[in-house]
Length: 350
Image: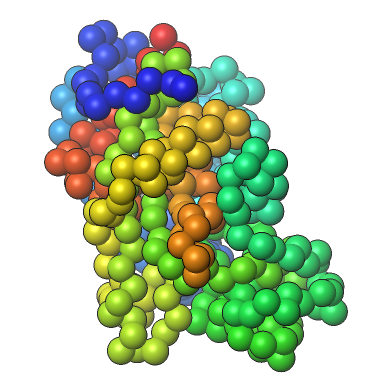
């Protein structure tokens, strides 16, 4: 088992003090956002990350967010090192998130975060589930629905959650994703098939218990830091009569109760359960090829068994994202979290 460390120290000698940060392009449409454009919250997230990185006095930062000239810029003047925070995907296409690291590798440019193979695998939720299940990590029961096969088998073990197999930011998950009978299931399958033609869908066992996120920083060779585990508090959704799930609105719509009423806190776990979660995460981190940082989401079923929901190899870096909330539980400021990500990546190249 790789070492788990508690230090948050930068490397003694910076290999790449000049960092180029690649971000999503606010000039271009983004189908994953309300109105198809960057919102005020997206712009604020960029401003906040720039402000936090500005606190790291040992580094100098340059920012690239114009995807129309991105390839030309990287080719003409290759950066010393890239902090890859382009989680929107190339030209804001989520399915092209892996294209940025692929391009950097083709140009021989060092960068932070997961490589293209890892991003491609983890974008396929059913594939990640299969990997986990093969290695004895509990996962929810699931039916895979290919493309527009709306007449495929529907689980009889209701309630179930229906969602896209390949999507980011909870796209396609709404209050109607949680269905309680076959009629509701058929209706939502048809709805998704109309909204997202030819997308593969999942009919997944609904896990009604506690939901946790585990943040991992580091790499196998240098050791890992496990951030305090986060728990999702859905209790305030009861008044809105909304199902307790992290729907698309929780990531994108400041007016929704999913945004305003879901709270996050440090989990209170027995040590054996915490250790089991950490063991699962470290195994999957290595098996799936994660690098530098990642987030793993779990939820318990009606009997209290913990099951893997998702692996996020390039989780949200924003100031109000889960990863920074977990760093805050440990007493670290936003800038310190970003420094630790840079530290992990630079030590990996050293």
